[in-house]
Amino acid sequence: MFVLYALLISVVFVLLSIINLKTFQLENYRIKNYLLKVLHLQFSFGRKTPLVCTNRIKRQFFCIFLLYFCIFLVFFAFIKDFWINFGLVILMFIFSSYVDAVSFLIMMPIEKLIKKNYIEKAKQRLSHCGCQVIAITGSFGKTTTKNILTQILKREFRVCASPRSFNTPMGICKTILENLKETDEFLILEFGARRVGEIDELCKITGVDYGIITPLGNCHLETFGSIENLENTKFELCEKAKNFVVFSGKSESSLKLFKKCPCKKFLVGSQDSFAYAKDVKVTSEGCSFTMILDDEEYQCKTQLLGEANVDNIIQASAMAYFLGMREEKIIEAIADLKPTPHRLEIIRGFANVIDDSYNSNLEGFKNALEVLKNFNARKIVVSPGIIELGYAQYDINKIAGCEVGNVADVFLIMNEINKDALTEGCISSKENKCQIIYAKSREEQKQILARIIKAGDVVLFENDLPDNIK
Image: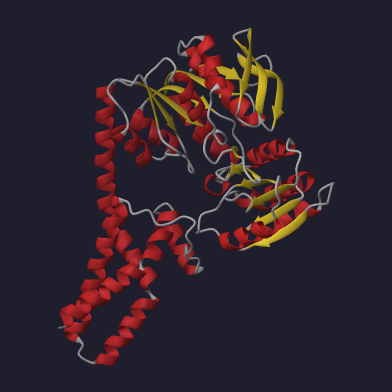
């Protein structure tokens, strides 16, 4: 009978561990980060970012079940007093987050072996395909530049690209193993990093034939520690690229890397560089501009919003040109470009919505507000601000709040994390006419918007935070 009791209670504890597993997953499977959340009782409740039931999570569920089953089996087999067992079960419930952490540690060596095997399979698959790898990294515009380049190159080449924001070792390996075909000529990958050495790790997995460095800035400073560490990490791509690297001239840091890059390189985006845009006109319907490419002028139009997207187009067009694509095909592709979901994506209806919820940096925030300015309507901004900025977080969010105050009529501030900084910045704006409203949850946000929104309004959703950020 005690075996049955141990089994039933273990199942209950496994179900309760879903909250801990979700917190662990949202902290990128880092034990230290998870324990810090547990110590501060910051568990990841909510449905905004549900637990993704990956194979790793399924293995973790099984390990947690075995751990609890063994513990309760010992309790019930050797302790016959009901109240003592009841007290031990309550104690296990209180410390269940730490028991789950033990299961995470147990699985770590196994997960490392699985990861190593997965990477080796991806390497073998890539070597058999023989396609050329284009890697894109930077602080801003990686995913959008990747999607633009993919749409352009597909006009003349067979192309595979990592979906959505797959930019980690496992995400890239998944792309290679599940999406890459033997006939593909180019594999376009987005390389993400939060710590020194992570770009180098990705380069070792895939190799890099061509690279693109998008603008660099204050992103993930909490994990990088300094802008210098961020620059050194992105420079790891320059050291591994076999052929050449295309650099954005739109940031001081990317210009700095361009100057010291040891391989063949091209600078684009800045005045008088190899490729750049002039006479840029931004409206609520899209952009028109003159593209200078290898000293030739081309008139371009795109439905993509914002000047930052023009910069992304220039970088992608330059790479396509270097790879041998004809200019007229590049111009045709630019006219047909589709927006990247959740990145300055316009959704028209009763009220126009600008979905920029995947943005997480100050420059992108400013660019979205520039787009918002072009709408002749009441302007509502919904945002929790920007995170993972370490020592600079308060000051940067104060600047963001000030920028919102100069443009918006209503500022709906989400979550608590940047509330004070955004409020202070908004109040200090020159216009100082912006109404500030607070919402602690997505449900409360929906209720507020339903109450205040009117026909013809334009609503900018700027950044979104997972459930592990309050």
